[in-house]
Length: 238
Ligand SMILES: Nc1ncnc2c1ncn2[C@@H]1O[C@H](COP(=O)(O)OP(=O)(O)O)[C@@H](O)[C@H]1O
Ligand SMILES: [Mg+2]
Image (cartoon, rainbow, N blue to C red; front, side, top):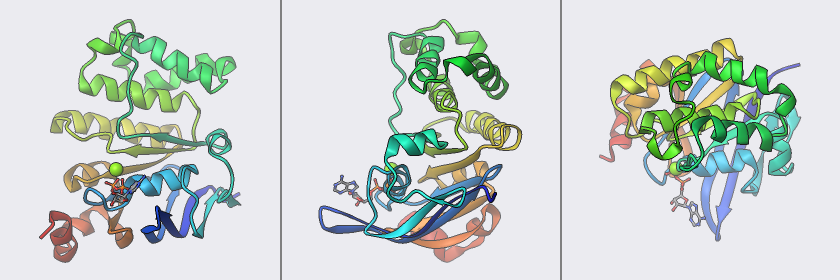
């Protein structure tokens, strides 16, 4: 079986405006992909379309070679697609542990809870230290860890992280780069990170796509994109 998340030539209209125009991306399991684009370029719309919140007017989406283009969101989630939205909120009056246990419960994964917790602590051993702290009292980086841990609670094959690292200090971003590597390499989960910040994206991802006005304008390695003056100019808004 070919294990792959693949979007082919996606067109998406929202209120009669063409927001995505021929977006094609693919991600292997064990790969970290970046989707880079300025604000409004179409990153979130791409993720929402992969998840089934938007129905493309053209194009197909495949998960492990199965066409999921018309499959409802909850079934895509069950098939292994997990999405962490930009504004992923940790419940403030639940502890870190309760936030994660709730996600395990909602994913109907109670029977695998021990195994899931083991994986989560393999990725983020830090969580052990603030397990019993209320969400309200967690730092920005700690909240991100809980948000990603909740996504892991759904035992995904692919993880879509929408601007998850925005506003974090560079040293914290490095910590997340290492965590994302454990998620992809050790847990075998394909990770796609959407970022408007090129530095963050190229720090975390091996291969990147650049999206501009709903079109993919570049595909290549992280080191290639930063050397491409034309693309960098567009990303800077020049
Ligand atoms: N629900 C919506 N209604 C109208 N326009 C939308 C809606 N969602 C997104 N858009 C528009 O689609 C474009 C892409 O948005 P989005 O995918 O959120 O970009 P990004 O995540 O890259 O910042 C923007 O111009 C945005 O205004
Ligand atoms: Mg967005």
